[in-house]
Length: 364
Image (cartoon, rainbow, N blue to C red; front, side, top):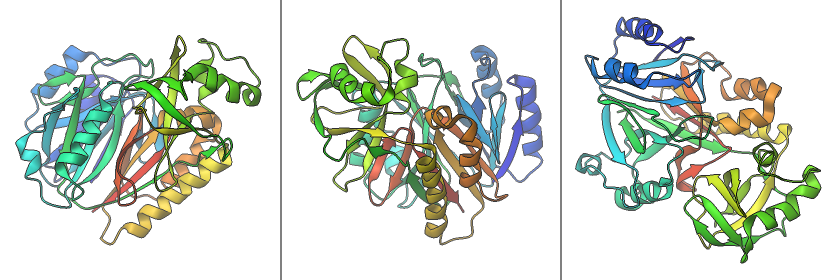
């Protein structure tokens, strides 16, 4: 795994980084591009279609290059093996390519999706239901911090939106997941009685925003409005209660009337709570995910992939550098992104789409 970073969001800088990568024994390329001031879709498409072997990647709010966070530029990750790319349209009923069904047990896929698509749940369920538990996944949601859906995935045919890219690494991986968020109260449990994809309509048949306000406003010390909702909700995400007792975090990002719009699905009938966190809890989780991945790696490790939620960075602010140091405690080649939702397969929870969560994969 060979990592080359660059700090200017333009084709010239990207091509310079690619030239450095070509000097190595590289047969496949994955790109993590920082949103910055915006990439020119037309130029990026022309560049991608002109490459001598296929490239794939995404445009993210921030990217991770070794031990640094880049707001401009990006990371070129070279692999010593050819990469197989599978594209899946994110729809209500995704159709998986036949080649995916032929993947060998244990195959590791980097999964990059349009993080603002309303069809995350059908994709995750289709992958799990149709491909089973023998494959391994790690990745996250690409897209803009403006939270407006736009082209964000780089393919050999150009820059697209509304898709998922599954990139077969042809290597092994030890994957771990942690978040550090805890319930406001153990007794605070309700049902998502009505929802539409990633929009929660009601909890226990009461408008979702009314319930959220009742429990969050006294703790936050402010009256929630459409203007301040995003900043308030960073500290009070939703938690989907799993049979294991763990929580899959859901990040509310805006309100529409009395509805809560989240990054990721909240299925009707889900058992839900409201979570809270503090920097110490999140930093402990970052340290824990690193140790968990290291403990699970029973092979020579060649590199590290990190997918950490952009909202963790926004919540931790000046302390996010400490989180990054705990996720990347050594000089192992490391790349990844601050994402709009994280994807991972673990033995305990299966395949999940997370929010406000840190995912680490050690690859061999």
